[in-house]
Each structure stands twice: as C-alpha cells, then as structure tokens.
Length: 448
Ligand SMILES: OC[C@H]1NNC[C@@H](O)[C@@H]1O
Image (tube, rainbow, N blue to C red; front, side):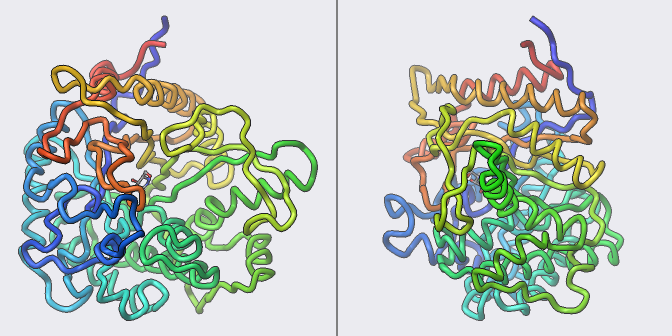
C-alpha cells in the first residue's frame, strides 16, 4: 500500500444547491422560481416530485452544518435562492430571505467552515421568466442588482464566489433538450440564453471588482471528456463537436473572450446565431480568480450521419455505469483538467462538483453501505492526486452532494448524497462514503 498525500492547503468540501435541499418554498416571502412552476407541472419530474419540502434545510441547516463539521471539510458550497432575496426578481429586497442566509453563513463560520456561494444554481424568479427569462437581456441587469445585494451583505464573510452553475444546463439542457426548467426546445433560444448568462457572469465580476469585495470570484462549467472511437477523421471531428458542445463553447468565451469558430459555423448551419453586442466578449472574459469544474463522466463518440445535433453518437464500450446510466470514467477527469491547463494555462481550478448516484438502502443501525459510491470517490481522488503531481493548479474539491436531494427532473429516487436523506422523517444518516471521505480529509490523503 502507498499513501497519496494531498497538499495541507487543499480545500476539501461538499456541495448542494438551494432548490434541491431547502424546501420552505413559500416561506418568509420567497417568490416562485421556474423550478416551482416546472416541478408543479404534471409529467415534468419523475413521480411528479417537487422541491416544496426537499431536505427541509431551510429549517434543518444547523443539522447540515453539524454534519459538515463532523466530516472535517474546510468549505461548503451552497447556492442562494434569488427568489428569496427578490421574490419578483427585482424591486424590494426580502429581508427575511436574507436573514436565512445570514444564519447559514454565521453557523458555517462558527463551525470553522468557509462558505463558497453560488449566486445562480437554476432557480430563476418566475416573474423574470414571465418577461422572457435569460433570453431577455434585461435579466442581466436584474442578476447584477441581485448579486450586488449579496456581495455587499456578505462582504468579508463569504470569500469564494461562483456566479453561475453549469451554464450549459441553464441554456442547452433547459432550452434545447428541454429536460429542465423552463423546458423549451429551440436551438436559437439555447444559444441566446448561453450568451446572455455569460454576459451576466461578466457583468457580475465587473460589479464585484468595482465594489472592492473581498475574496475570489469565478464561475462553474460542467465539462465532459469525449474521445473519438477510432482515428477516422469523421470520428475525430464528431468527438471534437461533442466535447465543444459542453466544454469549449463555455470555457473559450469565459477565459479567452472568443467563441470556437468551428462551432459558431456548425450552429449557423443549424440556423442559430450568437447575439453578440458590442463589448459582450470583453465583458464575458473579465479576469476571474479561479474556474469551477463539475465533472461526472465522459465516453467515446463516433460519426453517425444526421444523428442528433452533431452527426454523432455515443458508443457503449464497457464502462461501469452509475444509477444515472453515466459512465464511470475517472481517467476522463485527469484528461479534461489536463486539457484545461493545456488550453487555458495555469488558472486555479476547483472541482466544484463530482460524485455518483447509486441505489441506496437504509440498513441496520441506519447505516448505508454504499461501497460503489465510496469506490467512485476513491478512483477520482487518485486522479486528483495525479493532476496535482502533474502541475495542474487544482486547489480544491467539492463532493456532490452532502445530502441526497431533489435531483431535478429525476426527482428523489436518484440519490447522490454521502448522507442519506430519509424523506419521510427528514432525518440525515451518514453513509459509508461519508466516513471514507472523512478519513481522507483527516489523513490528508488516502492509501492505495
Ligand atoms: O446531476 C448531479 C448534479 N449535477 N450538477 C448540478 C447539480 O444540481 C446536480 O444535482
């Protein structure tokens, strides 16, 4: 056995998001979000599950903080619900909404845990969606006004700021594929939403700098690693498009201020144009202090004429699968972050999400023997160490997720937590994977 040691300043954390854990969807003046509308629309979410109660973290956040403290994490990534702060998206601040996050932030700091806050993790105020949502550039200004309130309120307490979570999900998953709120299926709309969200990110960074807010600011993109099944040029090009769909389309504007031309041409051939206005690309590529990467999976792609958006298909090559039917591909994590370093230089990287969904059973003594999840984490932690050894500026890692929670259109059946949530009693029960991670954190490394 050998011990893989991590730097003593490596930031271990876990992550959650407001709509997925808070519940209390009508409490203390919270306004409706697009996810309340979507989940309350029959047929949109498995089992017609919704976030009305979720893990009830709105009332049980102290239990969550106690679990974090016992786990030994240095940081906790969570998101702020815009509709709690501005129930109508703009206008009057809802003080009771701010109060909840004051309590959460103070409880974390009292426990010696750094809050890492995502400003937008998909719960757009419905009132803004009623005016076009992210397709309407007015939402950019509304987002900056919301961000300004949070920046000023928590300046000096929150020191790690993430503007958006997974802009690909906000744009393509939600407006082209249509699987997430608001559920549109229009390529031009998706391209417009992606652009406006990235402009909103940049404008928020400009506001953060102008206000002189303490700490570091970045954004989070979900990256996948697809490789061509063969070296045939058509397979190579198909895999290039599949990767760029998730990766370059977002990373290049954010870090280089340009869109990948081969993809601009591809979308143009499908009838979609990027609605760039003067100054947008400079705004989007405002210098940031780190890039957040969410990594779950990847795979192999080959060319298939007229298949999908990119004349490509994913190929099953024998990967183990999680309960989301995602390939378990730890090497893909090494490859994608090595690609980030090669393409974008030594920008500090935090893995802001990584984890696995498996079917969990509550066993004797409220234990959950989630060996597959613990093994998933072990395999990915080995890649973290490999990346650090290779010189990638990997500064931290947030396991998704602290708790089993509302897994969007998949509802509550799909469990990602290292802590089991009993949805009848709302009790929390640490799983074996929680104790595995607890030991890695305590030992600053793992035995392999
Ligand atoms: O699908 C698992 C996670 N992926 N990234 C965004 C989170 O909100 C999801 O629960």
